[in-house]
Length: 292
Image (cartoon, rainbow, N blue to C red; front, side, top):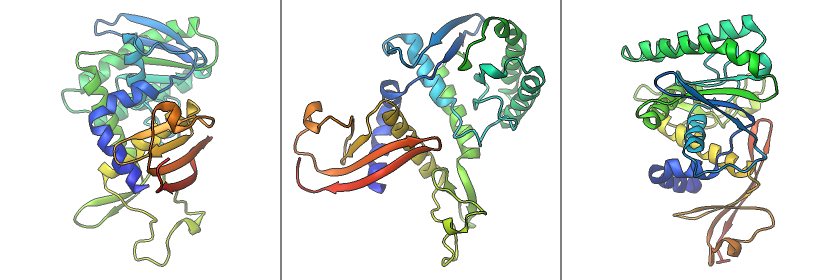
């Protein structure tokens, strides 16, 4: 796994945007793009319908949605878990919750109050501005949206891509660890993909001075998170066979062969992945020493 993470980190540094533009799937829902003047455009997205990835609006929605994702529903900004986004530039709710005024209103208050705590002095007014816009327009959207899926609102400002990335990192830095361990010299933590649970003591290593099964730096935890997000994208698109060498990650479908995608004489790591309600499952890992 370490080798796969190292390859992914190298690729991610130069192809971060391309990785998710090429692989990320938008969920079913009604999407709004709000411009700086407060005007908006609405888009209905169905996962079963192929997405035009060359369309500039779709490119914005893919990246804005990706960088606004929660690590999991158990790590929200809004403690009621009503609002399912992570920054002041986005607002995501289940459409089924739109009629629950008290729940929505209290969620909005907590969400934006928490984001103000995280914001710089210069950003506080921007957070408040977007809160006011959401509060003013949500009643209008409630009347016109009644089907299933999610309502997703994304604000598009000058320099939006860097802003979304920065806000995503701000959220991850506060939520990525399942537990924190201060060595006195640096803060380490248990990454989000490693389970620890007081009711499941077998998940801990009781024979060690530090009982946690794995401790990593914040930077390492974020790379791991991005890597598992990438694997999720692959699994959702049916590409569950992952081949990794020093320079490439090659995902293919079950009935495909590497030669079908123009790869010959491969040596490296093979992983077979799947998904359940909790996330990615790695069913098998093997090392391929003889070229295939």
